[in-house]
Amino acid sequence: MQNIACASIEIIDKAGKTHIVCSGAWTIESLGALSGQFEHFHPTHELIWDLGAITAIDTAGVALWQNINESFQKQGYNPTIIHAKEEYIHLYNLLYSSPSNALTPPPLPSRLYRIGKAAYETYSGILAFIAFLGEAFILLFHTLRHPHLIRYRSIGAHILETGAKALPIIAISAFLIGVVVAYQSVVQLQKFGADIFIVDTIGISLTRELAPLITAIVVAGRSGSAFTAQIGTMKMTQEIDAMKTMGFDPFIFLVWPRVIALMIVMPLLIFFADMIGIFGGMVIAATQSHLSFSEFTHRLQGALALKHYLIGIIKGPFFAFLIAFVGTHRGFQVSMNTESIGQYTTKSVVNAIFLVIACDALFSVLLTELKL
Amino acid sequence: MSSTLIRVENVTTAFGNNIVHDHVSCTVRHNEIYALLGGSGSGKSTLMREMILLEHPNSGTIEIFGHDLSTITPQEAFELRRSWGVLFQSGALYSSLTVGENIALLYKEYTTLSPNLIDELIRLKINLVGLPPHAAFLYPSELSGGMIKRAALARALALDPKLLFLDEPTSGLDPLSARQFDELILQLRDLLGLTVVMVTHDLDTIHHIVDRFVLLGDKKAIAEGTVEEVLNVDHPIVDYFFQKGSYGITR
Image (cartoon, rainbow over all chains, first blue to last red):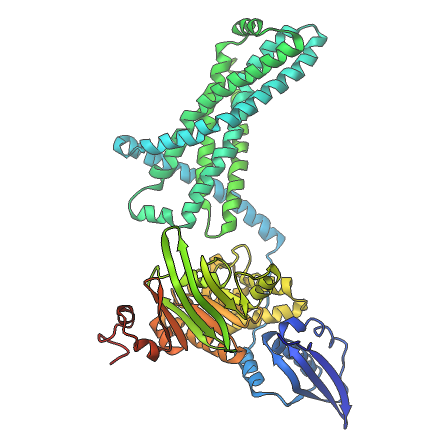
């Protein structure tokens, strides 16, 4: 490739006129040095553009020339142009033939407007979620009257995906929670010589509160986000529209199989987390306060009333319901750009975890008031 | 010949057992509008993807600006990528950026131009491709199909490339917009000295603005040249494409 001379400008005063001699290649690669050069130039004489020495010009070059020329015109000069090649004029005409409209960004709305908008969006978001639930239940009753519409295979597939495949991560999380609770309790209880109460602490706190909560959080992160991403992708590729036109209702085909699968799976996962969590506690009790496994289990039978365990399990379907509905609902909100899928997946997980914790708090207050 | 810009020689491509190109050759000359024509699945888009370094042929050579794409260094590849613009079939605008930001991105990354001049250039390019000025502030999801094509063309033209690749530029446009788009490409070729390589099905485009083209079919390059030259080739796929005898060209 030949060596390209950079764009340059020389100013020559000749016979009472200022010649602006342009030379070199006025192309995008070589314009950088030139763009600031005319900010402090104030002409005093009649101006003449001499374009004869320009070797090449592209749209960026024309735009720069136009910028400089306009600044002269604003100062009351009307430069004449000499030695301009015909192709430059053609290019100029192509770019500036239609009336120029300045690029003005739309004005930013006021702060008050933005607060109002955000509040209204939150309000309409809640309404939309309620409407989503309502539509889902209408279709649930419809399917219950026409049981052949129930998607058993789909439910089975989701049970495998959200339940069986979640076992390893839930095992690790629950085991560690058991270890943590046992460890902290042992230290405190040993001060009072009440080591044996470690069994009560672990048994009750895990089965009643911690195992359901940790399971729900893992499931929200794992399956809630997957629901949003799956349905969001289908929305973007217009698969949902295709389903609707074929008469396959998205609620029957996509929402309820996920919700029902998760509601079936969640209590089982909580039971699994109970077992592993208590085992984690047993390991720590054995190593830290020399409480053997058999002593631990013997004590557990007396300490852990059935109601604690049942309360923990009962929470499962409620948490599952919230996670699955938030996940699928957010999926349907995805719009036609790639960023929104990430946005709504994040929202889905955050909302699901918040709702799970709020629901857990409600249970806690309610059941305590009921003396359970 | 010195005016050869792209030289494709004996390119063979296969995806698994499915052979797409079987020793395909063609040449694109400087400053011409060249089309890759062929039925669905004839490998014309694949051939273009190989030219723009998105895919690699199994054997054969592709040379662009004298660089052999199979032995190109990363630095040369980078320079090559800067010297062409690509218009993808679905636009492929970055959906998280407005149209203006889509264009500005290239200026900000690759030039030292002042922000003022960048704004001016965005305005020019948007005007050039026939978009209204406020389109600069719209996101791709807010544009219609035709506007997306135009915005994507504006982005492809941002750095004043010498070589422009267009993947089905007129598909999805109404006939009038398609002709306007053709006219625009013709003007740009004449004024900016562009070489244009396009994948197209549009026979009107072939007749109106394309200088030379290659017809792909049966895994081979069946014919190459101007419309007249190709029509002289006796091959069922040529007959099929130009509907010889029924209506149209050979009245």
